[in-house]
Amino acid sequence: MVCGKPETLNDDDFNLLNPTIIIEVLSKSTKNYDRGDKFKLYRDLPALKEYILIDSESVDIEVWRINSKYHWELEEYKSIDKVLAIPALDVSVSLADIYEGTVFENPD
Image 1 (cartoon, rainbow, N blue to C red):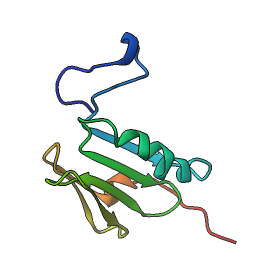
Image 2 (image 1 turned 45 degrees about the horizontal axis):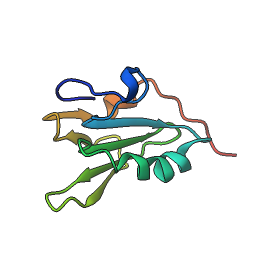
Image 3 (image 1 turned 90 degrees about the horizontal axis):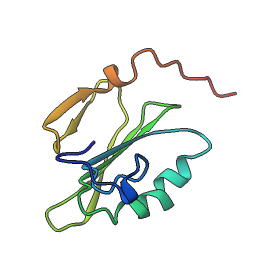
């Protein structure tokens, strides 16, 4: 999500330089990369205020927010009755709405 005019690298649609919020739906095969090396790259984007990771295998949302001292802080949501606050957009969304229709596999 971008607040303002999108800025891209080489005028393409694939390299947004000024996102305010990035939301990732984690998959089993990429979640370690999304939490690690990818987030390291995203932290270099000056406009980024929130990085939201939504687990697709369980009710688990991680929200990284930049604080007033420019340090990243983690807030976790692990209960379906919680409400995800997104201050950069002044919006809140219930986890029940986010996970509506999601069927989780039962572990063996």
